[in-house]
Structures are given as structure tokens and as C-alpha cells.
Image 1 (cartoon, rainbow, N blue to C red):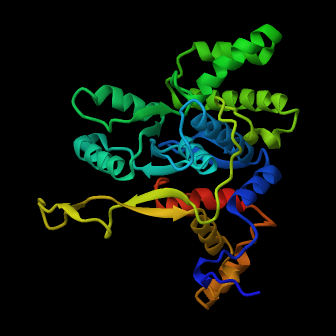
Image 2: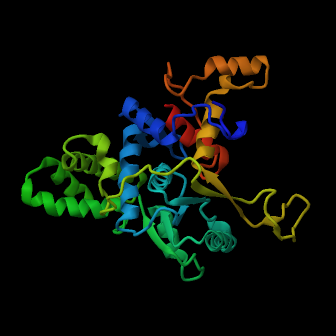
Image 3: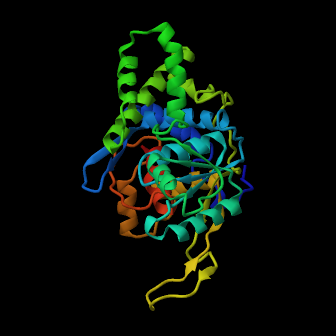
Length: 353
């Protein structure tokens, strides 16, 4: 039977969705390291396993649908400093059906211009909620007297704010477990760490891992011991609805780009090397687009990739998503909020393992 869809819109793995592949990869690789984040000196500052991304994204997704009060189709702006927390929030939005709107964090050296662009994105997409981390939160608190940030509800997701999903769940867990297991060593360590000020990135990463472990343990207990089902319960605050329900043709996220697609809004320049500033223009990315992109990147052997020896070498080097025979380690400095950095270096590797 011939498909009625044009060839360019057909994923190579026709019967598989990216959500199904992500669940399978996370279950297969489990505690294997997915991402290692390096600081400015090249030292490891944080790590995420495949299981951690999948379980924590389920928790944040349910928190978005519960405590935050979002519904599938609502927009959420993602404004994060470079770091691993962005990807967890992005996957959480995809799984909840909330349309993520990734943004570059405003540059402190040109904050006014960056905030004007950020507010233009907010006005265009109609977002009422912004997800962020403690770094951007501190910048917003320090500059809000002089600069107007987009008038939306802002929430932390990195465990450093009182309104973050990790902290909300932590306090709920503490109140219930103190009665059931007052001498639990995990809770004693949690209380000790939670009472300290975590101002450095290493402590933040430690808190991230600890809260994820506590949440995963509690969710598994509530769910009868089957950790793979934790996305079906209202982990973060009673979302309760089943995740990963989006269809192939539904919109997954909104990608705003400024390059050649925007209109010039600042024509004046100081010298001939200056590029005119352009307003961002949104592009709707569907779940089918995600899967098609990943397949094109990671399974080049299923189409005529350049037709050259370079293409043949790439085919021999890369592996099918279903059965990777070895893990390939890549180093990237691409911006994680846009295009190649997001699809090629984050979502693609997470699906491909």
C-alpha cells in the first residue's frame, strides 16, 4: 500500500515515534552517561544519565500540567543559561504537550536590546509562563529595577528556587516520609544539603542528582515498583494525565530565528562590519519534523548521502538507532537553544544513544 504522504515528510522509521525511541533508549542505556557538562576551565561540572533525563523530564512535565496549571498547546518560554537543565525542561515540555519556545538568555552587556527581543518573542507566541534556572533568576532579580523583563510567570526548574519542581516535591516528600521513615539516611542527607546555601555549580549539580534520586525512589514506590511507569502519575504536582500523547502532526515546539527570516529593525551601524539587528520570526516544528530530522542525521545510509566516499564513510561510521554497536562521544560548543546545537547535539544523541 502506497503512503499518501509526500516522500520528504515520511520518517524512515515509519512505525516508530521519537517518544517511543526515547523511552526505549533510556531503558536500554539506563544509568549510562548521556551528557557531561564542562565549565569554562574544561572541568566537569555536571552529568546527566539517560535515565535521569527521562525520569526527571516526566516529573517536570507533570509539574507543568499540575502546579503550574498549563495544558497541552500552551506556550512556555525557556530562558536558561548554558547548562544541562535546559534540555530536561525542553524534553518535559515535549512530553507534556506544552509548546516550548527556546530562547537565548539575554546578554548582560546589551540587556535592554536582549529583553526587547525576548518580549517580542513573548508577544508573538502568546506565552504566559517562563521556565528558567537560578542563574537567569538572579540576573532578573538584580536588573528588574532598571529593565522590564517579559511580564509572565517565571519558574525555576533547577532546584534552586522555592518555586522549583524539585523543591516543591522535596517538601511534599519530607512531610510524608518524616512520619513514615523519620530515620531514613537519604532524608538526613537531604535535610543537611537542603539547609546549606548552594551557590557554586558543583553543589547545584549535587542537589540536582540528589533530588532526582529521591523523586525517582518515591515515584517507583507509589507506582508499585515499576519505574518505567512513573510518567503516568502526577509526579510534580498532580498533573496526573498520561504523557507522550502528541501525534506526529501536532506542533512540538516553536523555534524563533533572526537570520535571514526576520525584518531588519536596527539599520544603523557603527562600521561596515556591523550586521543589522533583526526581529525574530517563529517557525512551527512538529513531532514528525523532529523524528525526520533525527533520522536524516543519524541514519544517512537510508538515503543517497552525497553519493561520495565521504558519504560512504559516514554510513560506515554511524549506526542505526535501534542497535548502536558502540557509543560515539562528541564534543560541542554549539548553542543548545537553536538548530544544530538542539537537534544535532542534544535531542539526536539522546534518541540514538
